[in-house]
Length: 184
Image 1 (cartoon, rainbow, N blue to C red):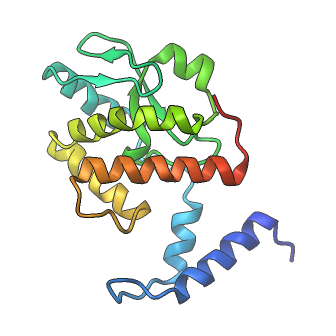
Image 2: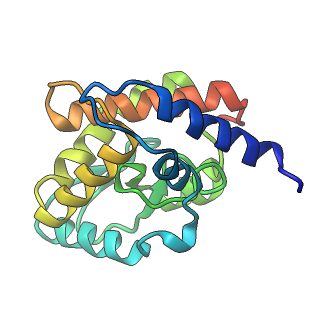
């Protein structure tokens, strides 16, 4: 039997996570950790669901700001749903990882790269705005809180959108540093 390095790392991480004492004293099983680490794109919701809900918010005169170009996204503006952590790194459509963005920048400049730390800090208020706007839709709020709970077990007592934006920025920076990903 042959295990790749990735499979071995996932297995070891699942074993380690199972041994870590949780704040809520709840037992974490390695099968759940393995599932969270290996979910593939075929197990995700289609982006049409997220896009339709963002379109509804835009029709209700909600506004988003591209985190990278600071372009305003309003009703009638073309936009992409940018994967903050690109699909090549993180192949899941969790709502915290999807924000409206300038389609030209997303397709031609960002692509599968991560932002420089300074750019990431500049994007934080725009991410917070996106999460706050998602919170005005019951469907998006439920999905966002569920997706965030899967990835960020401890969000502090701050305002949810602020705490989530901080957690996402930290995660992206950690991934960029640890994996030596190309940055823009």
